[in-house]
Length: 115
Length: 115
Image 1 (cartoon, each protein chain N blue to C red):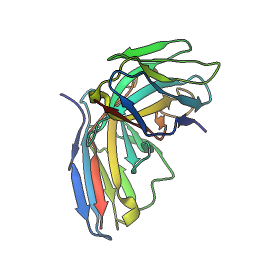
Image 2: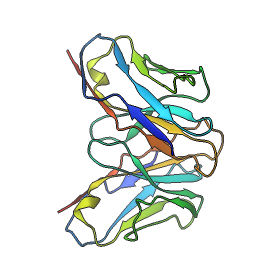
Image 3: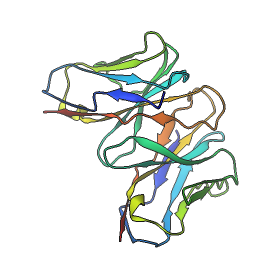
């Protein structure tokens, strides 16, 4: 297990289409986070899973967004009826639930372009 | 709420110059502080971290000291290299309340080092 894997790396979609991204965290990490990063900005928190439970969602996560982590392993992030404003890099990160000092391990991200 | 403010960028330096990137934060409780680096087309990599006041994080010649009295975590390097060209993000992780360990990021500082 060499890190957090995200697929696809790039996605171009037409406005109004649905897209789904996948994140495979480090296997022993029970915490999983999704972030969104727009050009020139730092990542912004979207949602958090502890094992299979989605425990927190940002107000940035509109009704068109849904995330799952069905078996506490991989996670998917779906965006329905995409809009041009959804164009961004979507980052997944995982960590262990132990101690304050743990940083995350981030994936390389999925870059979404809505045309 | 929690917030992180980084110095305005971009920063352009010549090789072997001294680097400082300022970072200040606002948080409830006692956060852990991080610097992440993002190379073009890649995800975020943890550069260094500090978990309590007066701790110094260091890695690859970079250093930052957790200053509670000034709520700062400035990044420094004595002699930068061309390979240090990247975007640098300061972040905090608040251990208190229901933050679930999510990270709050600054807006990032672009560093370009010329030969």
